[in-house]
Amino acid sequence: MTDASVLSEATASGLAGRRVALPESRALEVFAGLLERRGAEVWRCPLIAIHDSPDRTAIEAWLHRAIEAPFDRLIFLTGEGFTRLTGFAQCAGREDTWLAAVARTPTLVRGPKPGRAMKPFGVRPDAVAAAPTTEGIIETLSGQDRAGQHLAGQRIGVQLYGAEPNRRLLGFLEQAGADVFPVWPYRYADAAETGRVTGLIAALITGEVDAIAFTSQAQVRRLLRVARDAGHEDALLSALGRTVVAAIGPVVAEELCTHGISPAVVPEGRYFMKPLVSALTRHLRGTA
Image (tube, rainbow, N blue to C red; front, side, top):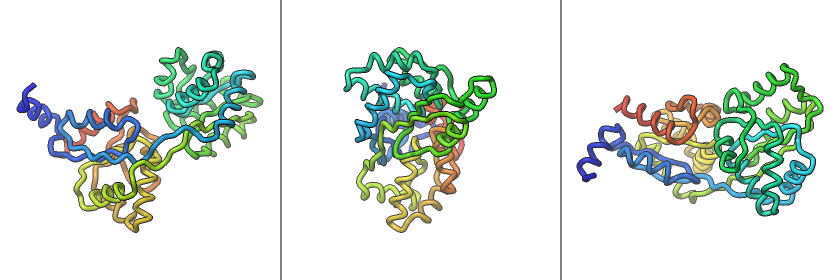
């Protein structure tokens, strides 16, 4: 393809001349490539890094319980969580017995991503939440409870993430009479140096960025935390009101709304990078 045809294709996509900020870390280059092929200029500023939980002893004890005395039910909130737990099982030489335990335990996942993470390991969830949120999980469990699959007395393993206690979900399960066994297999940490983040904040405030696309709650929180520490939180919130803000799904959209930020772009039904890029492209084309 010639340079001229590449330029023509990028212009037709609606993103030529648009600057899009990406706080993504893990799949930054994949995300950036999807946008750059559509002509966008990408501002890379990974805000969050993901690391294994340092409490290996607690995780191995949880895995031992899941294998030796399988739970009555497993709940996975994220694909990252399932993958990290499987990694811990591999290091302990127990991957096969862990996957066998998952296969024979009724499993509920918050959305499609955990199912995608499980597929290469030959296991799959038994149920997907009514919506990819905590409330969606609770709605699904409530329906199952009404259908006679009682939660009372059940031993339920719950994969959480970061430092999130998810009191809403754990409280619901405990009130239903379940014995809950939570595990946190990974933690978030700051990625880009604060100076780079303040540079992005300044660009947002001065209107140098057309759009910003968030893929996790932790990204939103760190951006606002750095702005708050620098005394620019109000200016940033005002700037985000003038900027096209995209969220990969309802969980991130809810986090943005908590801070008074209304995302203009949230893909419907499928909460992955490609649908997010498609939705963002359509929106920016429409506002050209």
